[in-house]
Image 1: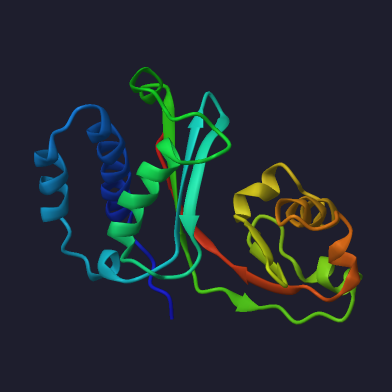
Image 2: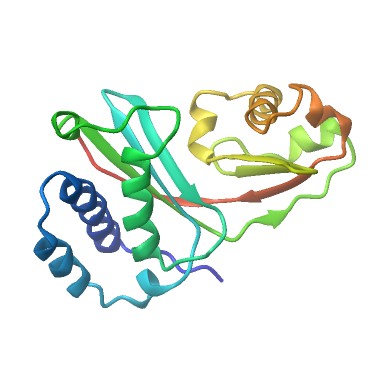
Length: 193
């Protein structure tokens, strides 16, 4: 059973993500150390998949994460915040000036579960828009969309088409019924503008 993080945990993680990015510009590890000292909740010490997304004026400005639970929530958020700001190959590195106009969103993932399906119609019918994050894999190709992507791609067919393209597959590959499909859910914390 996956534990739910509290609102206080979310606030702490958002502070951590912002401070980690800020420290890249103004080296001051004392504030990061103070935040780490606040971590008493065992949930933040669990290994979970996490993503950090950055938005500037409503547009995506960076998003990096890990699906697999390879690090503690706290350590993963710290690393993913830095990578979302400076290492997302789709964007130039975030500047110090941009940081004040950038909001942070954190997603804490449940463990991915295999989704069994018979055909393309069954696959599309089993996906829960706005609830399920989806992972697809075929041979050496793979990609994921967080549940938040359903806000832009509400139709399951369009969602799967774009996910296939993200994975480097043909847009209609999802109709072939030979993809490994996994789903997960997220708990989201975001800064309010």
